[in-house]
Amino acid sequence: MTLDRYLLRQFFPIFVVAVTMFVLLLSLIDLFANLWRYLNYEVPFKQIITVSYYYLPKSFSYAMPISLLFAAAYTLGDLYARNELTSIFSSGIPFRRFCLPLVLVGFLATIFSFYFDDRIVIPTLKIKNDLSRILLHQQRTENNSDIVIKANNGLIIYSVDYYDHNAQALNGVSIVEKNERGEFVSLVRSPRAAWTGDFWFLSNPVIYEWRDGLLRTRPLEDTDMYREKPDTFRRNAANVEELPAKEANLLVQDLKAAGLPFIQALADYYHRYSYATTSFVVMILSISMGGRFRKNILLMSLLASLVTAVGFYVMEMITMMMARLGYIPPLAGAWFPVATFVAVGGLLLRSAKT
Image 1 (cartoon, rainbow, N blue to C red):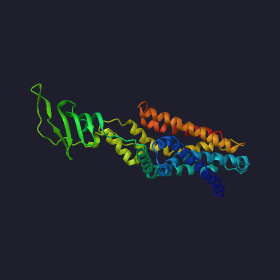
Image 2: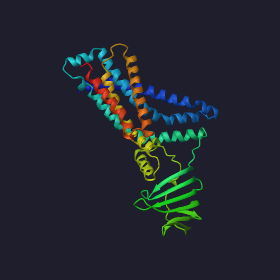
Image 3: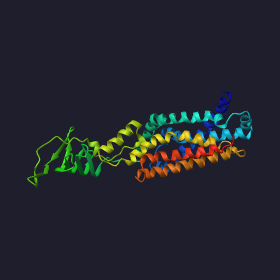
Image 4: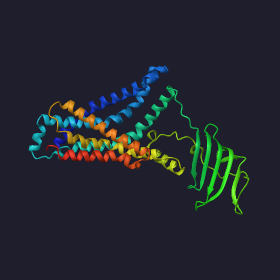
């Protein structure tokens, strides 16, 4: 227990300094990336600071894994350079046991990261994005065109030329109905449909249906059977990164039920959970690298941390891009980098000095 407390006392001051440095760096990168846009629109300085303030939680979320990696690698390297690790090993304490407090910190950081992102980062990031769009005059339209929606377990298919969100109206409506065997039952066509609050009111609808072996047409009397919500037809403006985990899961289910593309949303939903484990992954990597530097510890630990973090994020970016495009399963795209770097950390740990 004494050694555990000593190790944590060495670790946490370095972590605090590192996370402060990385949060400041990430915030400045985001600020300068959009600074010329703010200047073009003559955004007041106070508003720019407000946007940067709401980006701080997201910066902390990005910075925490890198800071944990740097702090752990530097702490262990510094102990090794001062021959303290040698004394500990000589007393018969295994390296894995000595580093157990850091592994526990990584595990707790994983749990904290998930709930911090879900409760703090998501709301503040949405505020930051909405405020940025207003200040930079970037409007998001919810109108949509060339829409195909499946309803009632695929038994009803809507084909719409254009959805007007402000008027809550559909233009160029075709509705195909099938039976449970997948056979064609009828086709309803209408130039326009208006949302009444409970159902779609079709203007001059015509129905095509099989009768006596022939496809016959007739005017369709007024009906209230078409009750798909207007939000089903609008452009998918919701971003999984701006939704809590429960709402993100509901979004994926809604996209599936409506027959809309859902692969990208599903990949981002899985990534919400896999990203939270990054803190634990980097702790495994940092422990495996901790005793490998005896000279220039600060520089080498920082360099190793950045190289490892860049490698992880690049692999994650590639696999997530492939998952969003449908080349690999969404689950693999989110978790493959985590599994790979845990395996790499395990191999490095086996060769670590002890």
